[in-house]
Amino acid sequence: MELLIKKARIVDYYQNFTGDIYINDGIINKIGVNLNEKCLKIDGEGLVVMPSFVDLHVHFREPGFTRKEDIESGSRAAAKGGYTMVNLMANTDPVCSSMDTVNYVLNRAKQVGILDVHQCVSITDNFEGKDTSHLDKLDDRVKIISEDGKDVTDSSVMLEAMVKAKKSRRIVMCHSEDHSLSNIDMRLAENIMTWRNITLSEFTGCAVHIAHVSTKESMEYIMEGKIKGANITCEVAPHHIVLYENDYRVNPPIRTKEDRDFLIKSIKDGWVDTISTDHAPHTSEDKMQGAPGISGIETAFSLCYTNLVKGGHITLNKLSGLMSKNPSDILGIKKGRITPGYEGDLVLLDLNKEYKIQREEFLSKGKNTPFEGYMVFGDIVKTIKAGKVVFEK
Image 1 (tube, helix red, strand yellow):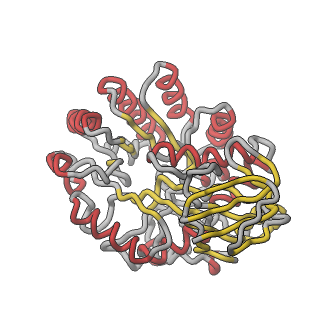
Image 2: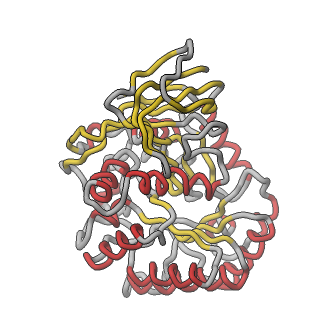
């Protein structure tokens, strides 16, 4: 498969110029000006081409909850949002605690053929918070373990899991929440467990990724840990850097303006590694009954571009690092850069196009969003996976 993109503004984490990109056999072969190859061409004049986005925090709900989302609908939604790689959480039915479920998900994703997928395995067997023996049976395709949706309350169990993860060179992705405090104060519940998970990482040397950081205090603990050399990375979600003092139900909750502003400052100052969506689609019935979560993978780039880049906080290069290069580096994949030898996964954007977010236009089964009616910039025109167009406006 050969593809030549002509006269686009090429932007990734370090470069910004107008030129051409030639993809051959799914790999970026050449970048430059006035390239001339005999193959399919895309006219990129007036558009920006960036590395496609990589999302470290996604729920596609399959197996078990396909009324909310499935791998095909989730893949189509992700491609519409400019993503070609997602890291799927383990809170399926059955809980992903074995290679059987990993293999099922990877095979389904391959059948659908739109995205690359990594499937997390649960930290404890069946999310029961006690047994980590299943971790001894995983193969090298599992790079991240996570209990997302909850935390491992027993610190000795989490310690045991981190020791195993360090030995097998896996990342422990932490949903930081002390569930004994959740009904008392969700802020305290997040802060205490963020500190604990960082402390256990420091003790074990295990690579830890702190998910959906939402409070100033949690981010300060992460900053302190990084200064001390802890092997930690972290993410923030678009809804936590756009909204504040809003009662839309997500977990962790939308916080105060002070928290929101501190997260943005932390992005500017380089403490935040990635922006991840925590895409959590629900049926309208489940949402009405109080299910926490947002269908966010189709709106993430536009919200971040509008609020962070057009808002004057960071450059487009910086946003590319947060949404493409850094998550690719964490996963250890050759995506996220527009460089010869890297995968030909790109997104073409019209940054001047303003549009209204409308849930009925979502390709996700989940229409749950607090951003209905928001006006945003940054329309995704095409998403390209290994030189093949997988979404076109």
